[in-house]
Picture 1 (cartoon, one colour):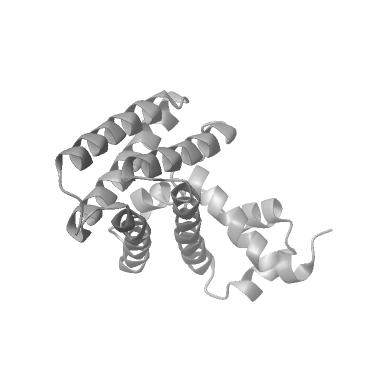
Picture 2: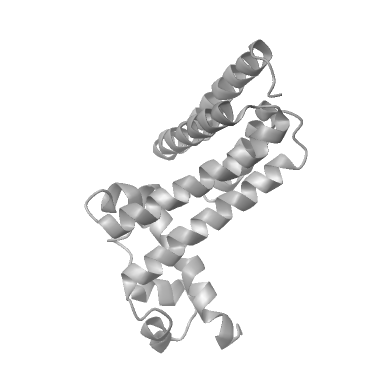
Length: 198
């Protein structure tokens, strides 16, 4: 039986998965309690700000998760294209294992809650900034100048987000693979045509 002391972490994990699959409005505290196995009375003890506080914690967790995946992808990468390919493989594998249900960690909530809610919009913007910084930090040592690294980070995030939506609709990794391979080909062409950062 899980320890009571980790119920908060389990609730954040369960909420993140539920928000990813169903969205914010279709997820209740009861769903989170059921999926996390946390004591029913712990919801407002751990999250006195209610569901919105739990969602903000799940959004922050999405930042951690992406940073970890980028770090993992960068371990064996010798150039920007190989980093993006490794990251795409990690994401595609996770997506396939989820039965094509787990796309982007926050996309469903972004579509529901931004820009109508300023506090959530700021949280989403902060997470995307973290994702961008995680990629830039890894691209620059691979020879990209800061401006190009930032542009490539934005392009990578945009391509991955769109490809995950297409793949979720198709219940297949094919759109994701096609999109990311096109992105990798463009990166190869660009980095081969441009001088490396000094």
